[in-house]
Length: 322
Image 1 (spheres, rainbow, N blue to C red):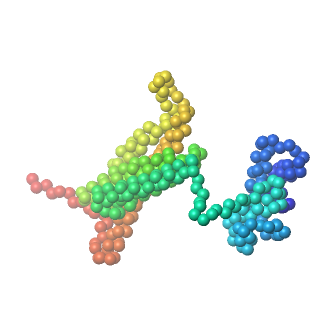
Image 2: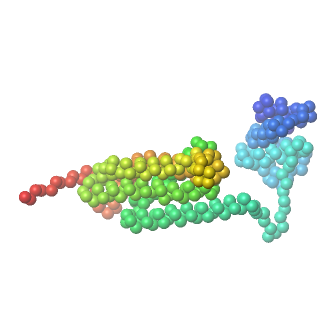
């Protein structure tokens, strides 16, 4: 296993060699460096050699993987084989994998926090699907069309992009519970912008304006309400995101309390998701509405010979009968 030093940085290779030779008494920090060096080496594809298992007694999974070419193995399988090879070469340093042969009708389940997390994930997943279906049902009933609900529900996808972007920027993990609640809440919040925009555009079309003219006029008219509704939600969640609260028991401001660590993920997810969606909704939703309406008109014309309804409808002024 002398190849391990070739795949490691020079500093880690020297520290590992000194530790294995017993020439240094490694402290806790150096032990962590050694563990990182070994873990990094195990993931290196060039470290694996099938010849390392000759003369030993590899386990059954190792024997199955040795029959395959190195390029056909996944990263996890390469890491597993490298670990097994290190365990054969350094039995006092690397512990081999332990396989448990369970009797029939027995299984292993994770309990405790892992079990509760899986239950919460399943519940929030069902809640998200039910919320989406109910929103779509209401939109189809209101607009009497499938095209408009599909366009409005595209804002939900945009909100998910904003949520992920916010978590990456702030360096926060995707918490199953609080971030999941934020995603479900956004599904009900962000569709309002699309409803306000497209409903007014359809009203203008009913008054005689063309498709493009009605969409542009709706975007200009509804710009202020959309921005104000997003700004009020954004400003209202800032104290929760930065961890500022007011203690009514002592009548003083509190920062970085324990509860803020719990609510921060949700507030950051809603702020970034709503902000990202609001900006793109003003561009993506009207564009999709115009493009899909033109595409639908072309399909109806090709299949049924129905006349196309363009966007250049001229509204004649009313004649004065006095």
